[in-house]
Image (tube, rainbow, N blue to C red; front, side, top):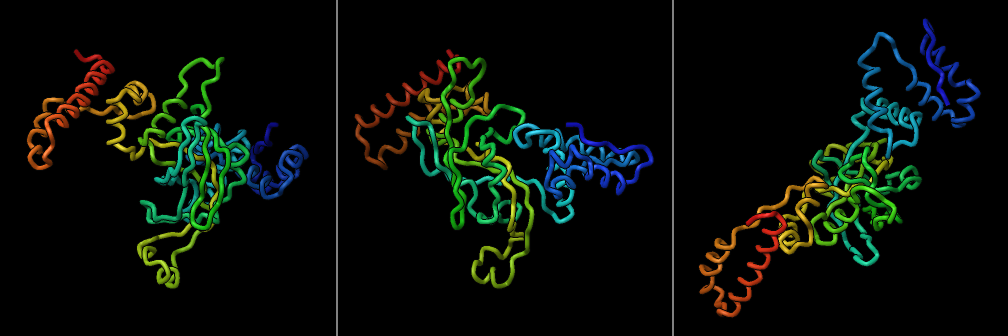
Length: 317
């Protein structure tokens, strides 16, 4: 449905009033607050080219996974514009909290936010996170890339006292699907303990500075700039940020994850330490740990096997 556009020499108030009274707009957006947001976002000052450019970029950012239509994207753009003066708006938050995985059924349960202080010295109240919008399209993307296909889907999401948890399903590749199926790689990284974090994208709606009473009850709030009391959850992402380096090396060396699979999700394959260096290290520490020759031989055999596997994977002679 085309949204009314401003006419030449029409003032903002006149346009918004006409837009609000448009029968098609009333039918499409029965709630006045929603209709007003869309009409306001549609208004453009021809003299303000920077504002128009920002609006276009905003629509492109939100459209796709985050917004169902252009009108929906415009509503988010207007919401962002109205909240920016208050230091609120769109934000991302990463939490390290995967509690459980099930390899056979391909799912994990993770904390997606837990009221810990983030790098911006802010906290998001779990009880104030509005899940309504997300529940309509509970897909999970990789690294907040909204232009790519989702890699998973949230089966359930629950608000607890000080955290929000979600169960994420990683579906198997459909037989008729052509192209790269990143879901397999993402789940392999999770089940091998390499990816330990989930990240959320949300719009902060209301916030306050910690009070003296809150700080006395919770001393770690002393350096907090802002407590976000209300927020609108837009998306959940699997993220490669802060992946477990030790688990990554082990998985690659044993052939559980291929280097090219890591590169496809934006992770640089690790460099495996040369076997001669490892042998030297073990010989050096042997008296300290009093290992038997058989123990050392067994360890060396395992290392050699891992190196041979890695050499084949990387095509090294």
